[in-house]
Image 1 (spheres, rainbow, N blue to C red):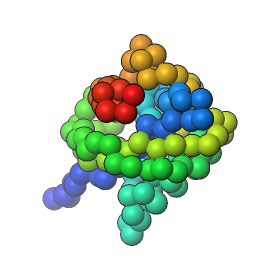
Image 2 (cartoon, rainbow, N blue to C red):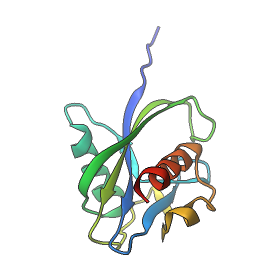
Image 3 (tube, helix red, strand yellow):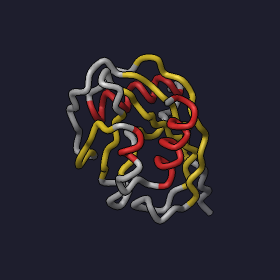
Length: 137
């Protein structure tokens, strides 16, 4: 019998020089919006994974990376397939707001945090944005 284990994933709510935050619509979250991120590779630190994923998905370099929240997604229908994620969320800053999307990113927007809540965010990003508003704005 094959054993399955939760996957460690990272993502970040990133603020740009304008003070706006980046949200993205990806192919993986069934039409909802979220933040860039992905899986942590074997032997990779969480912060290294975050920096790599942001460079790959949206072409941004991150700085001022700090822990935000820990969340868990267990076989959630919002995701495109059955998965169990341990989601390590961060806040970060990018000196650029120029996005170079990879094939996973369908759309993106730099918005103020309150405006982000008007988008159809996945539930995990909604919690992250609300936490950002309560603790950092």
